[in-house]
Amino acid sequence: MAIWLTLCGAILVIAYLLGSFPTGYIAVKQLKGIDIREVGSGSTGATNVLRTLGKGPGAVVLLIDCCKGILAIALVYGLFNFAPSQDFIPPTVDVNLWQPWLLTLAGLAAVMGHSKSIFLGFTGGKSVATGLGTLLAISWQVGLATLGVFAIVIAISRIVSLSSISGAIAVTIFMTLFHQPLPCILYAVVGGLYVIWRHRGNIERLLAGTEPKIGQTLPTAPTEPEQAA
Image (cartoon, rainbow, N blue to C red; front, top):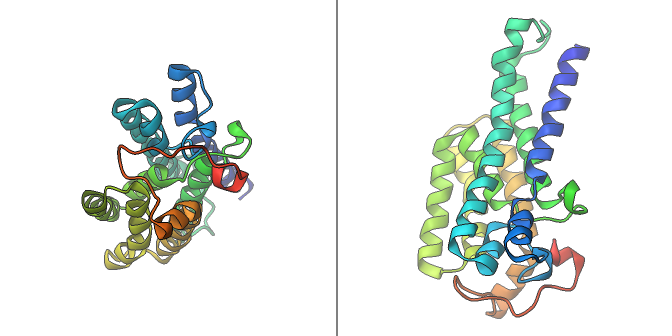
């Protein structure tokens, strides 16, 4: 059991470190020589990279951040495929019970890593792209359905934050409709609420009618650490 618990713990640590990889920060630092946390919304995510560097770099950061979430979940599937051949799974472990819970914890670790990166003093992005990656890896149907909601809302509103919040609300519905295990549904609830909480500054601007659309920029970076993260 000790080996098994160590392997599970290692997976969670690696998932967090994957999420923590500061893609947007590195891209802006290398291409423009500035700290992305000091411009625009202060977020290190793809949307702020889009505003700072343009569509190409923004798309690359989006893709890499999404892949971080996919890899975090793939580690869990890899563990459950590899461990039986090495007799690492104790007889008392119910795989059907452990796997969805470990998927949930790995997903949360990656999402937290993106927004609270150990490499950036526990600041980061809004966790949308990384969260989408985890959803696609857990259930591609849920991931694509959530992405569809995002795409529809952004096509209508042209506001990324509103689209992200809409997807965060819809994901729990899709997890339930596609009959995912209870731990995965709980992941959708907790992860969705966390993404919405990360957008609280955006929500204030949405209510005030000042949230920028695609192509528009925020005049200055937020001054409060909570918002800048």
